Image 1 (tube, rainbow, N blue to C red):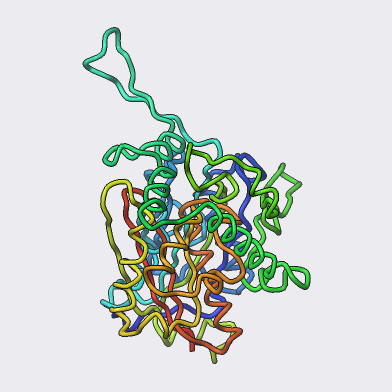
Image 2: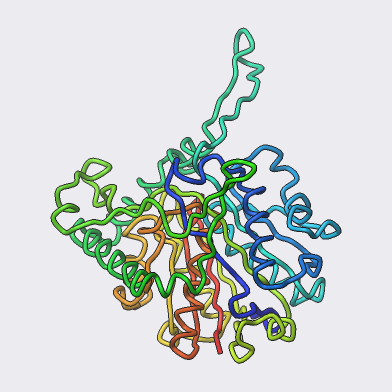
Length: 396
């Protein structure tokens, strides 16, 4: 259980998420993420040099990704600040924030910034020499698509792992379609009154078109509206499966940032000193081969145990749910109300730029609880390799 790590209220942002091969498809994720964080700091009147440590969460290799932490810090205006690269697939945000919290907890630093940045569009293509191959053959990898398509240990595609879990827990096609429509309905709530809720935490992404011209991405791009009839008309992605392309997420591009600091500094930086956001506990899990979605519930339970609370004590639950079965199974195992999880949307609807996804969901959950007057927030999400990670935060 953490006792010293806090997040300033509104000391965070997420950009809108851009569709696959859309507005952000040609932006270097680290350079673009640093530029966005710098603009955010300027909007808050914060000095980037106050950052003692920078944690860059990123999962898709970009040119000179090797230098991600210190490079991003310098680009933000914190030239003397060291940084580190954190990369754990879809759990990258969770681990970045927890690592920052542990840095504060142990007194290593008092003020840190977590920058989560990914571009799944135009993913890199890697090649290695094959000494055993004739004529200098190469071994090649499509960094994004090949890894979506096959876990080297479990030997199956990510969607197959979701189908394996759905079969084990008796999840039906009808349940998946109904869950998709419910998450869409919740996302539409975030668009009400000219996107009033989203504007609490979304920070526009500024794309430089030329030396003198730029454009702003102010809203999510690539969200597809589904209907009951439309979903019913789709074929399963895998023969005999329960997931269609409508009941799974889509790759996206974007970045997000979160300040993790001490209680005193959090109050100083907070947009409302009366609101306190505490990092409370962390949980992790790994399940059996090719059953990725089944890891979410045990990781969440570990986080709840660390916080000393029960599922019934939660005021908000946010999940990274790349497949509809994720939420259905988690709710069944933990006794959660499926319909009240993921208020205001989830990655199933607005897409998944990997590193930034969890951060966006966490700040959405903070804002949901701030509207309610506080409470405990659980964030959970699966990740490659049949793993999952979770955080419990408390908003007072």
